Length: 313
Image (cartoon, rainbow, N blue to C red; front, side, top):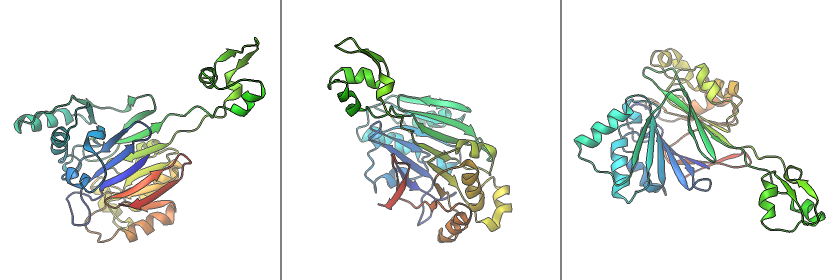
């Protein structure tokens, strides 16, 4: 599981930061990639990575401000031109369906794949075999959502040595035992599979928030998250401006991570007024030491051990 930041700026593109887009790579888990927001020129940013657009099968739009949305029609078209034929689903606030329909109609864009559009409300918006996604509305000038991606717990490791001690050899019976079912052995002995499987492996949790003021919903979505991606448009000294424009400061992002019991915080959506994010990161670290500042093309590996490492492409 990896997070790749394709755009980390706020409002308008800048030389150092494009506008918002984040790729969650689930290649080992599901063979797919999920995209969170699709600001202008996202498809250009993808060209600088190893991401293949046809592997992206879900797009989650947090809100309908242009810096999170204007790249979507172009991406949808390019995915089709580049051989994408598998279905794709776009999730987003009310209005996303009209935006996509009008954009594709006016530009006479034909897609070679099935496009599904889901206008969301608070609650579980996706529930699949290995993951589910919960959405909650945040506090912004328009309807803005945060997403909580939860990897479902995995069955514990089959205790093969313990099975060998009672004469159980590898074979189809292992599947029944690992499923926790009662199994009758060749000698007539009945065993409970649960006694031969280790503790379940806790799944990882990634929370990605749209633009927002500091609010209760942000903390709820981030509860015990392995990684919290939180906007920090402004420095702590500009809290009044942040409040006026429905955004968060570095300190507010860090306080939310702390209150939520998150493991790791990544601040993003950095205003172009700041030449560097170094001072912003220092502000966050004073409150929540396990913090990092996103940069375009920076990648974070979210390991099964709950550890987070990062590198720049």
